[in-house]
Amino acid sequence: MTSNICVSIKPKNNLEALTLIKKAETAKADFVEVRFDDLKDLQSLSDLSGATKIPLIATNKLPSEGGSFTGTQAQRWQILINAAKSGFQYIDLDLTTLRLKEQIVDLKELGVKTIVSFHKFDGAFNIQEMRRVLDAEMDSGADVCKIIGTATHVKDNLAVLNFVSENAVKAQLVCFCMGEHGRISRLLSPVFGAFFTFAALEQGSETAPGQISINEMRTAYSLLRQ
Image 1 (cartoon, rainbow, N blue to C red):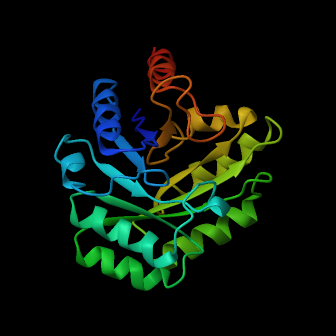
Image 2 (cartoon, helix red, strand yellow):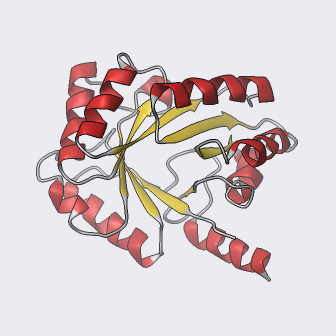
């Protein structure tokens, strides 16, 4: 059973980013997502990619996407391009991004893989909605398709895990539910075939509702393997 974990961090400066990346490396993260929403020091991004062999994911989310970046679309895109040119292996773009296909082509020309994301913050997806989103993400040229809903009941996890089980052969898929009720699908989605899931570096450093710490997830996976 392969259970890849991506630790999400939201640093305010490069020094903090380097410290958190090193902590994620010690915790044996498989990927590290660097949230650029609040990062003020945008110089020497290659220092971050050069500090670890773990694949780094750059994302820069607007408030409408659960983030806090308030700059212009041009500024947002330039930050992501700079990350791509500085050694980040993945760039995360929202499915609603303007000129999405063109941006994906630009990124692939730089040798970077793309994650195309779609989040639903007010409830869970049904199977039909997830199919439509997956088709759109695959059509965009995404290397990784990310579909994240919000569980309002524990049973919401069942549809997500069933969807992952049926569709993980079509695409590298990241799909689970946020929220306290979604912790089950966060944990189990890789067991059902998801490419990776997200974790917090430690308790208190969560970047999304319902995140579990990487150490808790590793312990749970060890128990599942027994």
